[in-house]
Image 1 (cartoon, one colour):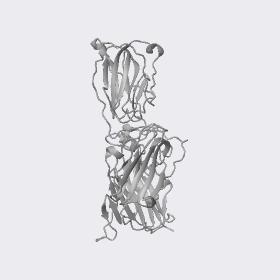
Image 2 (cartoon, one colour):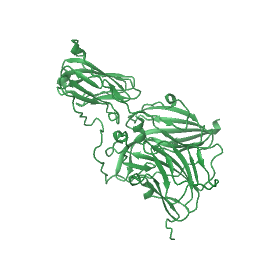
Image 3 (cartoon, one colour):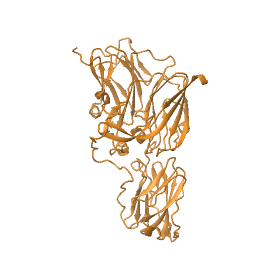
Image 4 (cartoon, rainbow, N blue to C red):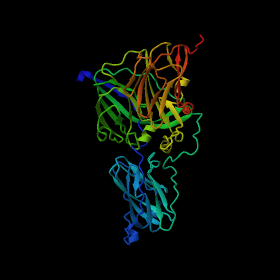
Length: 474
C-alpha cells in the first residue's frame, strides 16, 4: 500500500474567531441570588487559576477589597448563557462563576471590562462590581455575541442596562463599509482545475491559519481559511480512493476549527469534531460517490466559519475517469458579509432571514475574472467544475454567449449528442450543490460568466471568458 501513498501538502489559513453549527438562542431566567434569601457569601478574593486560559479582571483596587455580596453562577453553551437575565438585590461586589458546558471556548465579558475566559468543560471564577444601573454582558469571541450570547445583570427595582461593550465584540455594522484607497491589490485565485491526484491513497495536510485578505478592491477582511486561500485548495480524486486529511490548527490560532467533507460517509461526532489551537487530527474517508462536493469548517457557528472563508471543493471522478477536454477550471460561488476593515465578517448580516451580502463572487474575490479574464482558444472544449458554497444565496450559473452541451448536476446528467440535441443555458445550484458543465466558445470575443440572479452581478459575481484575442471583428 505504501507505494500508492501520495503526500500532498496544502497550507491553510487559520483564524481568530470561532462559531457554531447553528445559531443558538440565549437562555433567559431571573435568578434570585443567595443574598436575597439571607445567605451572604464572605469575600474570598479573586480566584483565577485556569489551565492555559487567561482570565482578565479589570476591577479597581478599592472595589476588589469590597465585601462580596453573593456568588453569581453562569453556564455557557453554543450559543447562549444560562441564565441570561439575572436580578440582584443591590449594587455592589459579586463573585462570578462561569461553567463552560460547550465544546468550544467561551467567555463572559461585562460592560465594565471584566472578563472571564473558560475552555471547554472548564470552570473559572472572578469578581465584578454591579452598579445601580446594572451591567450587560456578552461572549466576546467573534460572532458569539451576534449568535445570541448576551445577557444583563439588573438591580432590583431598576430597568435593564443598555448594552455597551466597546472593544468586546464587533457588533452589527449599521453603516456601509467604506473602501480603503490604501488597501493592497487583490490576489487573483488561479481558476485552473488541478490534475487528478496520483495513486489510490492520498495524505493531504490542511492547516488553518488566520490572515488578512483583500476580498474586493479596497476591502480587507480578517479571514479564516484552509490552505491560506479562499476558497481552500481543490482536492481531486476518483471513486475508490482513500483520502487521509491531516487537519492542523496551529498554536497561533485563537479559535478551534474543524472540517466537514460532504464527499465522505463518516459520523459527524467522529471525524468532524473541533480541534483546539495547537492540536491536529486525522480525518480519513473513502471516495464512494462521484461528484463536485463541498468541504467546510463546521465549528459553531458554522454559518460564520463558512461566511468568513472556510470552504473548498472536492472533485471525485468516476473510477474510469472523465473524458479529455482542452481546458478545465474550478469555480466556487460564495458571499461576503463585510465587517469593519481588517476585521472578521459580520455574522449578524449573514444570519439575516433575507440575506443581503455585500459581495457575491467567484473564487473569493469580487470581479477578479472581469479584471483579469480567463483566456481560452476559440473552439476549444472547456469543462468547469462549479460549486455554490453559499452560505445562503442560490446560484444560477450562466455563461453569456454559449450553451452547455454537457451538464452533470448532483449525479443527474445531460450528455452531449443526446437524442434531440438538448442543451442547457443555466445551472441552478442551492448552497452546497455542485455541477460539471462543458461548452465551446464559437468565435473570438468575451463571454461573461455570471449568476443569472442579476441583482448580484453588480456585487461582484461577474467574470469573463476571453476566446482568442477577444475581438470578434478580427
